[in-house]
Amino acid sequence: MNAERLEQMFQDRTKLSESIREFFRLRGYIEVETPILVASPDMSPALSPFETELVAADGTTRRGALITSPEFSMKKLLGEGLQKIYTLTKVFRNSDFFVDDAPKQHNPEFTMLEWYQQGMGYEAGMDETESLVKFCLQAFGKEALQPFDRVHIPTRFKELTGLELCDAGAEDLRTACMSLGLTTDPADTWSDLFHRIFVTHMETKLPKAGAFVYDFPKQQAALSRLTPDGKYAERFELYIGGQELCNAFSELTDGTEQRRRFEEEQAERTRVGKPSFPIDEELIRLLPSVRQPTFGNALGVDRLLMLLTGANSIEDILAFPARKLFT
Image (cartoon, rainbow, N blue to C red; front, side, top):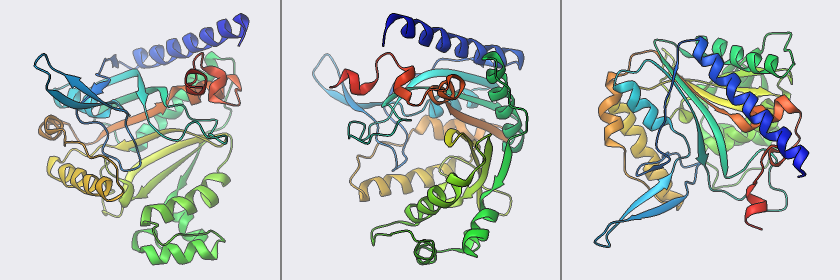
């Protein structure tokens, strides 16, 4: 990347950061800082944190990891009484980034915007997320002239398969995959099978101009509360131009239920051969102090910048992509 392109890239990154900060300043949010090195990172079996050790003066060590998200720390701040907060931070996810067909949307180190508001549910959160994206589009001289679509996952799933998603078992999903021409593996879990259907027959058919998909299966609700009927997770994702930009929830604040879900995730991590981390007891203690509803969203800043600048690969908007650093 030559000097002219580097300068433009950093100008674009600055413009986006300033736009995000201005958007949240106008809405009364405060910017917070959270730790990047923690003892209890994300518990999701789908994620692999970068692990490390802290060495004490006496030579003893403590396990730690780089965050995959600032979520746990931000929820602690909510539990301490903060109402409207956001952060722009680096996060880290360890995966297969160096194969020849590495995805163009991924880098092991990337920038995340995460924000929370107590007293707001996920429906209003969709409105705010749309306003944020359009605010940034305008800052870059672009306009989104139509409202983003809202796609109800259980309804779309039933149209595809004839099944009620909340009642479908793993074998039902396996049969549905076969009827849709998808291959399966005996080791596939319920979530594996649902994800295969979602990615190939739902995600690819979303409007390119912008669409929220919402009400995910409760099996994929590790950090969100459930819908009033208990059948689905109050969770949504936003897709624009085929890219997932964010993952958002009405936040779970029941400490007992959260512990149960963390224990399930610990067991699943052990089952699939991934290291398990201790439950964050301070988070469990503070969760009941968070109001219901509370909305939280995690948005990939690099992907948003790709959208705003027309970049085809995340490496086009990074000065030091991982494949360059570790070649």
